[in-house]
Length: 332
Ligand code: MN
Picture 1: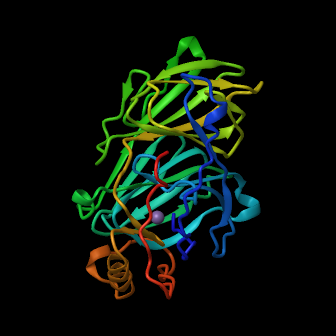
Picture 2 (picture 1 turned 45 degrees about the vertical axis):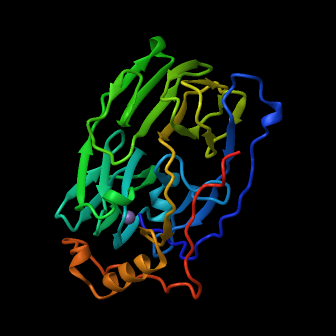
Picture 3 (picture 1 turned 30 degrees about the vertical axis):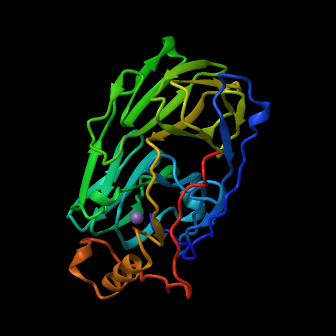
């Protein structure tokens, strides 16, 4: 997916925690609410973005979270994102329904399908296109980005496809599909550049499940469907609950009479400052200016996408001001 928000949002410290009301031993959870972002272009899909936002830039190395659908493709036209570049990040595509055709400048031609991980490493530079297929009548899923640490941000472009086997927890209280990292006794073989977790967790109606997690990680629970309590905090559909590091068990309660579907993200706190603009992650304004120039001049840095019908996406104009680094609010 291509980010259409060209203006970086100024980062301000904003404490959303209500630490005073939290019983001892209960995880500290901040509720991040989404904002609607139209993807633009001839197809008018709108996504719900929970990362980045003023109160939080990163959860582990997860730096971008778009949640979309269920979207009736007959009404909106679905997704058609022309070839566009990325640097310094990995893209994670995870669908609940529908199908997206992926092409990239490695020569990958793949289909993103429900329950299947597609992980693309931008590294020094890649370009790709994403188009929902005629087989997709309802498009529903998440598009996530992972920031690469400085020592690996210029790594070679790469593309991985992995299909996790869903794991049943507590006699059917939950079904867990681990696409990155480890959870519920299962682990993904897909390499990450920082310690990460990414899993779909589906809770049975009214079920409670306890998941052992890495206490040094921060976590984010994105609720797709249903209402889910984590610790003492109720999360509604489309909200992302940020769980501060500390607890080595997360207790999730489905407070609804239907199955609740969530995506659990986690990772070691990412302490580096990053500069995010359009589809690039760098460390300085100059990194962004150079990447933009190289995309506009069709440099080899990004390669070429074969087989996409239509023009590639031009980069938006740079802002007049220097793009400033962003990081998480100071921990308190
Ligand atoms: Mn993209």
